[in-house]
Length: 390
Image (tube, rainbow, N blue to C red; front, side):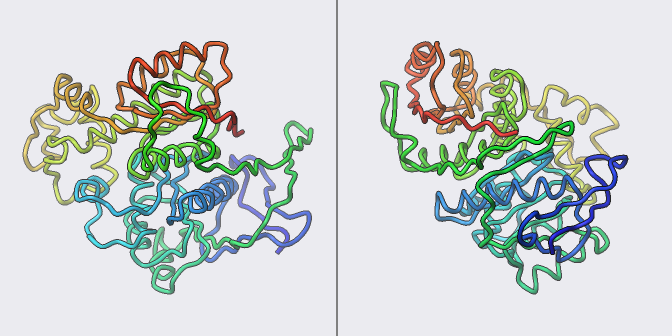
């Protein structure tokens, strides 16, 4: 197929809409549903991300995309008991690709609501069962087992979007897009992100562990497909906070840092001890947890409100308790798609437990940024490569 008609473009008033190939066949097969313009933008960006993550780490990878940026991305490392609880995963022995999806979806569950999923490997029954219980627009993968496809076809009253990507597809070396009737052309960003990019360590602390290297690669590859400006916090084989599309880098760092903090606070003993009503859906649980760990907990704890959510009224998670808990967090990796212009980004990152950083370098204030890293004992590598994506 060389051309596929779509319901409409970015908005219902933008008609007609289609995707098409100038040469060759469209490398995507629609197995179920009727994907739209934004669905395909999410799917094709997400597919590139997971493909590169698997190539860089050797492990299955998954991504959860919303509005052409990842809410989460991860590789298929096993889940701890705590992660299974905060990700609403009941099965203990998940397949690696299912673990990758649970992690990607669990990075920022609020933002992942209604996501488009990408999987680097064939979608199996374990993964389909996880997807079945989440609010999602669709999934793209290189293939599906019969059991998985049957499960996915039941979602959204049979209208769930299921796309199969040809893993052998190679895009043209040049890419174009049109803005206001004017065509832009550039070479595709085929930059390979690997451990060699982390060799130029500019801080006093020069010891990067293998796990830190892996997390920095996850952060950088995630940033390659995140709308700029962007930064990404990663830990334990997954992104835990992505700040996308901000005009100011410090705002990226704060936004992503707040998301990373929320990911950690979901693991606080008080949060883990919340007793929800059995009839409360996952989305409402996510919303309640987000409010509980925010500065607006009274919205779910006030008399008359908590009974609609919890079976037992929870004790508040105080600001002092949150601050104490987050002060004990360490081992977080931070990637940036362009240089940090000031040391304030590093100071904010330190509050979220960051111990290693990868950024291009090249600022007139690099010395200030390096000095700030040294003050916190961080390792920082200059990659020499900018990763803007628009």
